[in-house]
Length: 378
Ligand SMILES: Cc1cc2nc3c(=O)[nH]c(=O)nc-3n(C[C@H](O)[C@H](O)[C@H](O)COP(=O)(O)OP(=O)(O)OC[C@H]3O[C@@H](n4cnc5c(N)ncnc54)[C@H](O)[C@@H]3O)c2cc1C
Image (cartoon, rainbow, N blue to C red; front, side, top):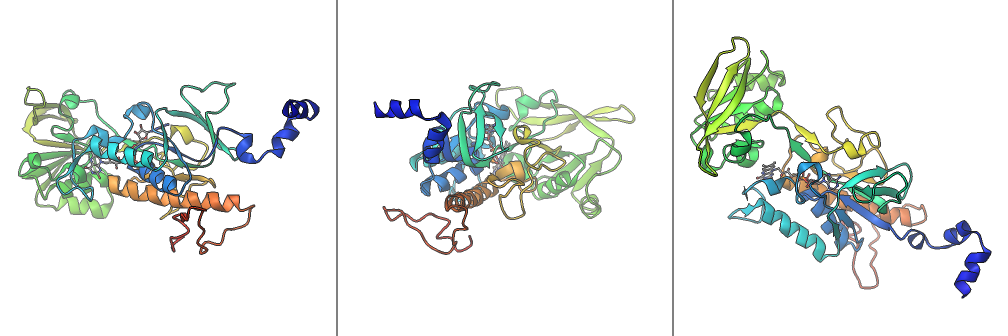
């Protein structure tokens, strides 16, 4: 056969470089999205609608969270626009996944275990195919990292039983639900987040008590002053929670908290219908540590207002780069930004190194317009 003759007469590398790049590497795709929360799926919806056939690795219990992300660990979402009666967290994420698939996203239920960003196309391995001599599972021109974050827990006795049945790690998400209305609420933490959460909860609870392990707040001076002067808030220094107590029946709610003074050792049981953790989050960035810039808490640093990381072609969105808002809607919004920026990057890379004129509206033979081209902001 002609083909085998050519192969036998020419060195492999020559043949290889004669092929268009897309044929050289069968694993090469324009874009890979890592993650499966609102940020990842919003990015995938935009990329797939732009005909960029993204591959989305949704993880297999990656970072201890089911595919679908943090929202799969909660019940009703009442603040995501478009659902006037609320929607279950898992249902919302299933809908987003369906929407990604509908437009052509290839969703793979595997966890990305290793990346090589040293040159483009970037290389990715999954937990299933990783090994020193293994070829990467995929290579990609652009990568969107949307691996999210996890709220830190304290492993208190009773914590697992009353998690989401009185215990929450997000006052903005859960504070307004009826079980907390006019009830004594507790916040654990001494930083800005704890202060913000406590003041937010003061709108709903009968009282809010902030438990601070040390003898002072870590919050900024202005925030600390606001907290300490709030009529509904009490701050208890040198105090930790030691146990969560409540209704014993399945799905029973928490009703009390054991607290301990760390100086005197004294313990007491207090009425408490809500317990909000504000002890920090752990962004899922072990995968990219040392490969792109992270801040001192491990969050991916993005250029403000964009998804650009320290490495061209690698974009980040959602909670993995946002330690302030941490909401489904802000994650989704940043996923949109990442997709539009990745799309722009891919288009410009493909135009032989020449900057693509951003205002020129290009259409494919079917008359589809790449979304970023029609976006006057980009
Ligand atoms: C209990 C709870 C209740 C909440 N309630 C609300 C609410 O009511 N309203 C609201 O707006 N927000 C709420 N939030 C916050 C909201 O869930 C988050 O802000 C949002 O989910 C962040 O989305 P994300 O896309 O950044 O990533 P995440 O939702 O964190 O998802 C990231 C996903 O990426 C996957 N992943 C991680 N590493 C890898 C890897 N290496 N390979 C493949 N996959 C990987 C993980 O498995 C995870 O599933 C709540 C959070 C919690 C924990």
